[in-house]
Length: 157
Image 1 (tube, helix red, strand yellow):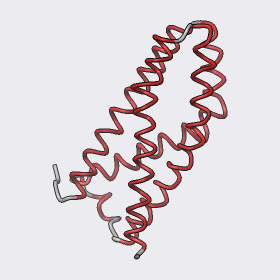
Image 2: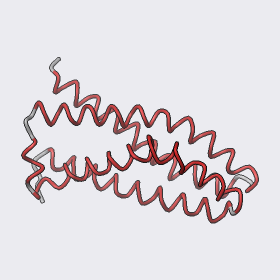
Image 3: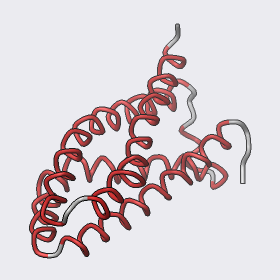
């Protein structure tokens, strides 16, 4: 097996785990927390799940970044970053960078504590905000995945 094939497999598996997990949290966990869990128990429920998934997501995001770099290098596809038709390459890097900053810097350094304080004071608004933010991230990620899947198969728009 060559490095390109291995990198593609790692990339796809990492994306399935990362974005699939984001979809699960966004479309299942957060609505359940908002509507089925008492406000007093909501934060503890969410933090237990989020803590476990954040660790896994850090691994997936790291593997996606490394495998994306390897694929770009092996294919000598750096020129794509100079052409607007390959907008999805830029989008992939931006989505990856956004999640990398969130997972490795923002959440552990300040966002988790900020959200915890806010959720204790006003669980309804805090969880509504969190769900809207996750919906936005999921939408951008899904658009990027669709563009990348089409672009990787020759559809340039």
